Each structure stands twice: as C-alpha cells, then as structure tokens.
Image 1 (cartoon, rainbow, N blue to C red):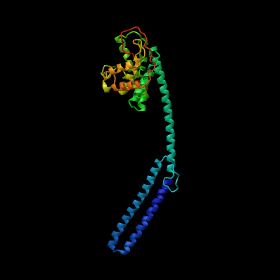
Image 2 (tube, one colour; image 1 turned 90 degrees about the vertical axis):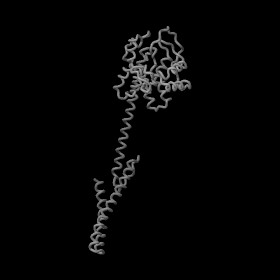
Image 3 (cartoon, rainbow, N blue to C red; image 1 turned 135 degrees about the horizontal axis):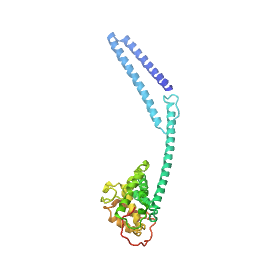
Image 4 (cartoon, rainbow, N blue to C red; image 1 turned 135 degrees about the vertical axis):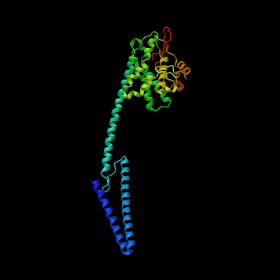
Length: 323
C-alpha cells in the first residue's frame, strides 16, 4: 500500500508539472502566433509535453528498478532509506533470502549426515560379503582403496573418485545372492556352477538400482568383469562400451585377487602381478588404467596392503576368479 501511494504521488507531481508547462506554452503560442500556426503549435506542444512526461517517468522508474536489482543482488542488507521507493521491500527480501539460505544449509547438513550413514551401511555390507570366506576378508576395502587411488591418478574430480571408491566397495555385493557352498567352495567350479557365480554382477546391480542415491554406482558393480575384447561378462561389452568406472574396478579387483592368497593360487608379488596386467592390457584391461596403477605402486603412492608370503596350497587346476 505504501509503495502504491509513493508511486501515485510521484506520478501526480510529474504530470502536474508537465501539464503546467504545456498549458503555459500553449497560451504563449496562441498569443504570439497566427490562428493556424497557433493551432499546430498547440498540438505539437501537447505531444511534446506528453512525450517529455513519459520519458521522465521512464527514466525515474528505471533508476529505481536498477537500484533495487543492485541492492537485492548485494550480500548485505543496506540501510533503509526513507525516500526510497522500495525502502520496505529490500529488507524483507534479504530477510526472506537469509531464511531460505539457513533452511538450505540445514537440509544440506541433514543430507550429508544421511549420506555418511549410508556409506557406513555400505561398508558394513561389504564387510559382511567378505566375511563369508576367510580368504576374502578385507578384499572389498582394498579394492576400494586401489580403485580410488587409480581414479585420482587419472585426474578425475573428487566426486568421481568417491563414486568409484564406493562402487568398488560394493562390487561383490551380488555374492549375497549366491549360495554359500559356491562362494566358499575350495575345489574347482563346474561350468554350471561358474555360470551361477557369474550372476553376482547382475544380482549386485539389481540390489543397488532401486536406491536412487546409489544408481551411479551400478556400472562399477554390474560391469567390472567385462573385458575390452568382448570376452567378459555379463554382456560381452567391448572397448569404450565399458564405462571407465568399471574398467578401473576391474583392474583394482584383479590386482588384489592376485596379490592375496586364494584357495586356487598363492599370493603373488606386486611387480609380477603388474607385469601380468600389462601383458593383458588392450585385450582384457584398459592400458591407461594399468599404467596408472603401475605408477602408483612403483612410486610408493599406493600401499599394497596385506601382501603375504606365498602360502603353500596343493596345486589345483586354475579356475576362474570368484571376485
């Protein structure tokens, strides 16, 4: 209501002034000019007066609006000016924006807390998966650490690194849907049994996909056993069809599997494992990812955890990896 009266008062004053000047000019023209010329002069003066009044009103209002926009964009609430057209709007705007910012900050902190809780739950699930068999203990945590280090080495941003770390942490979550006797089996798997075990990738994706916050992790879980030459599973994807996340998790997973003891093989030296990965680069593994891992290990930037002396196992026919 106050703004309405302020605008009305300013418009009235401006129109009154413009009208007064116009009327005086018209009277002067009638006294000094001939009848015909005076008539045209009156029309011209009236139009000129109206145009001048409109121009003055436009300039005045434009300046006030520009001042309002500048003030609203300011991070600080200005001192209220009594003669300012929007003197009452500006403080109310800043107060509203501050309330919104506080609410957004509160929601952000709440979301961060929920996300941290979700990550704790993911670590618990990963540990539950690994604890099903003694030789897998700590596997998911190590793969997550290796994958995050590789992603960092490749220059990915912090968010991408964290996404890849979490995908690697949960890469074997689908094993929860595999029968215990298959996961814990220490003798070679039959072809039929291996087909069942391979389903852990799609089972893991099915577990994560309904959870909106975890959908970005699905490629790393579902596709970490794909191979560049198309001989992997579950879909036989090739080359760039395989997301970078899955290619990173694949290398980290294989590296940990070969540097820790398994029922079907003894733990291998890290340098020897890197040599194997290099020989399989371009066919099974992404060469860029393998190079990044090699540099991390050689420079000591990546600690190869839980590397043990080779354990004596009774030699068996090699079987496909379970993880």
